[in-house]
Length: 438
Image 1 (cartoon, one colour):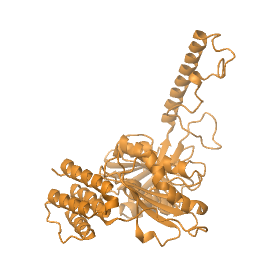
Image 2 (spheres, rainbow, N blue to C red):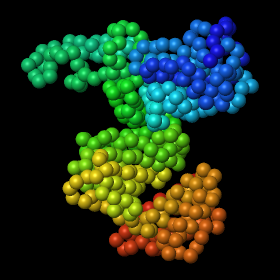
Image 3 (cartoon, rainbow, N blue to C red):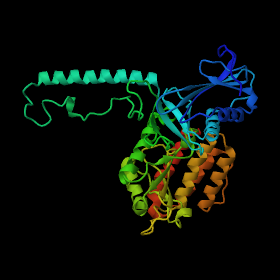
Image 4 (tube, one colour):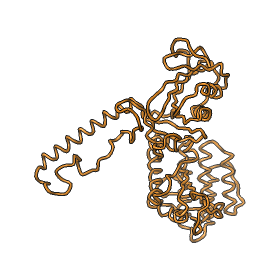
């Protein structure tokens, strides 16, 4: 590790801003940066903020901060240095080497949008409010409070005497009978043991438990998902997660996996969740999922259940397609029993596995593969779809024609009791082809 020297940040082409929770070991930090940037430790310059590190390809200024996070790292890479790693890769290396949770910036314009990575490599979105954000939020909160008080006074003056003695009238300082809650935009919590009035960093929530910060709420950061995937997508996801929570309040909050958990989601991504429930509630939760989610978003057809999980006493993998959402937004829901060995009655399957519906699901996945420029994946999906409905046909690469043909054969193969739902699904698939591929 080299340190010392003077000067600014001129001549640097790439930068990172990261936070560390807990103590900072400088030799470990140097080794982690060397690993992350693929250089020797001698090519890493580390110094306290205010001092400029020696002329090295990679330099890092560290400073102590107050609140839920302990250290801020400002890392810069000189022009001409080797290709720098992404924030995710660098954050993971730092968390592992330092044995501390690390927060790295999300690729969004939202100032509070971060990702947190734990020492074991678990990633999740996080909502981190900095001192300037908090000051503006506190000012906004005061303005909102003053507005509410003024509105309450106006209502009291205009209705003086008309509500005297009635329930909820004549006081309380709340306008319109609403329960008091935190103002919009104000952090939900403050770090424990911090000096009152001193600017602090508040980790308002994270999608994964953060070691050393047991009071940070674990919840899905919907606004960051909305920034990437669109407001409608995030709101649909919220309704699904809320429906699961209402179905079994004592269960853990459903957690993301797949592309949503790795920030690689695009407009073709689906909802992919893991829901862990108490052992005693496992069978009842599996049974209740379809009706609970149908209340949030009407189902296009009955839930499907992967037969590979039917022999498992502790897991089910369910697939649900919704009538009022795009076909791409299917829910893949893995329901898990908390201990892995639940006692009590065996859980139901949670749904059937009709081959015609499975083939149509392959047709939707093939549209995704084509749009993502993955022709080999599209061909494989269509070939397996034809096999599932007993057809000798195979994909030709004329995608609209292939997918329509698979939809028609799946519709013809459907059992009588499946007919209405399969016809509706096949019609939606044909509409998807017209919209996406023609």
